[in-house]
Image 1 (tube, rainbow, N blue to C red):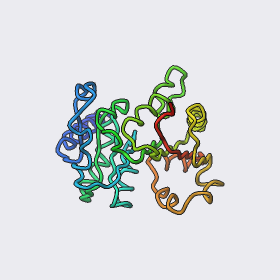
Image 2 (image 1 turned 45 degrees about the vertical axis):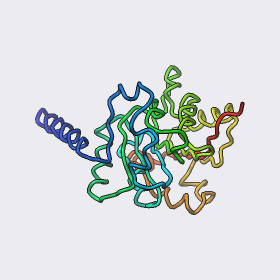
Image 3 (image 1 turned 60 degrees about the horizontal axis):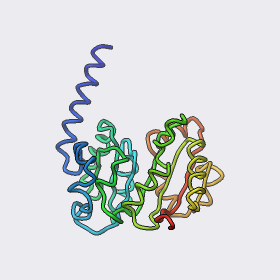
Image 4 (image 1 turned 90 degrees about the vertical axis):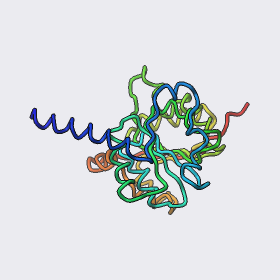
Length: 238
């Protein structure tokens, strides 16, 4: 067992070192995030070398959606964001091996996203199986909390699509309550995405719903229903 632990630690260190060699992975220091601005802010289209729409996968884990959708939609750009380098490595490695030019990764805490994206720079956000933060004192850490919606408003185009997929009915119901309080009407609500709600999806949605995260596949094997919410995010009405 001791030898296994040593090998796992070596692999983790090797992955961290490899991450630093990938040009499509950005690991800025926390001081940059705290400053409120960075060299990346407003420059992502230059990084990709095109003016194609940008989609973020926040809390991307291993980046299954970032990589899968980049393959599926070559005329869009995709950026996976997570604080865990060990998770990001898997998606970043695939992007490197396959030479995928429209995918990148940012290793950073999500509350600092406005430091790395300019006004109206992002067209779409995916929240894929975020931690539901069940305890009441953790409410402000839920990625659909009003403070996060306000963060997203700083860098998304008005009317940007926000997609949430979660195994947590608690988080889904909480999100719907937040949207109601914010005066935001959900465009699509499903509490059993691959069951009774499947036929209500648009054909394009069915296409990218074929992508499943590592955790999503585990939930489906256990028979856990998947929730999906889609809505547009606009500036707050004054």
